[in-house]
Amino acid sequence: MNTELTYTNINPIPALTWNWLKINRATIDAEAPELGGSVTVSGLTDSIQHIKAFVPFATIAAEKGGSGEDANAILASFCPTPEAFIAQEGAQIAEPVILRFALENGKSHASRQAIIAEPGSSITVIMDYTSEPDAGGFHAVQTKLWAKAGAHIHLVKVNLLGSGFTQLDDTAAFCDAGASIDVTQIELGGAKTYAGVGATLSGYKSSFKSDTAYYCRDNQLLDMNYAVWHKGGSTDTDMHVKGVVADDAVKVYRGTIDFQHGCAGATGNEQEETLLLSPTAVNKSIPMILCDEEDVSGTHGATIGRLSAEELFYMQSRGISELEAKRMMSRAKIAATAHFVGDAAVTGEIDAFLDRLESQAQ
Image (cartoon, rainbow, N blue to C red):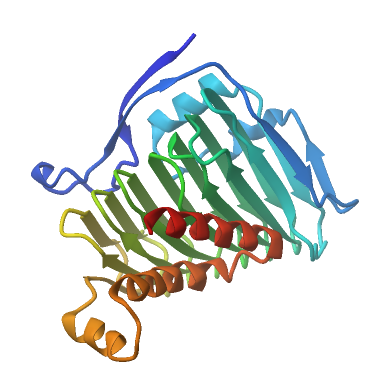
């Protein structure tokens, strides 16, 4: 039996702007069919504790993820039992843990994970979402990251879902003193994707870094909300988002750095680059800095544009067609971020996905 999902407060921006911009929040209105699909896990070692029913999941939920309370309600109803991957204290885990999601056409899938790095440890987790190219369904995932004192977590999420999927993907990150978290996201698949990332930097000299790449085409919708709350002193944020919007696609990006009282010495930077390849493509971007502390430094910017006539003429004068020029520029934006994935097999899947898109466009 299908479940009707209508939630009107997904990916809420931390500080409201004018309603007529239609960027304060997103709305999910979708059908969620019966559950199906599978997840396989590889790369576990003796230094990683894997708990399949992680009861304390809610205890690390004191702060917010990027997708908001409505997302919490969806995930809790679809997936009551989260799992956890815990890197032991001091463990430097070289090879990534890989979660491969194989989703089925006409099915729903939901999961929740806690990734915890004990003091002084380091762990990389890759989450790879795949299905048949024309498959559709509903996918929801929530991932909580907790880097304890001096620890490091690198989370990679790669969306290669079929053209009919609606996906809700929420990430919540928490950093203790001297800890760092990196998040790499590649958004290529699906019909509608709602991706939220929220990071709370409570510990002194903790840091958060994110690199996101996307390619929106046809009638795709990609709605993103990234927010970092600086609470500890001398904390640091560095966020980069780059991608392509083509055809009749719609992309929304909210990026917020919030310097809260008590975070003296904190620094933050967020930058976005968007390449528009169609006059009917829609892009909405709102980079924002909030500040309640004097001794901080924050920068932000958004570059949005098209390939100019001069650029196209330069390439065509060297034997590169307009179609090939657009292909090269699009691939370059994805490749710059895919470099951070850190697994050759997953990077190969990304290249194969883009190859298929290009062959269909010809």
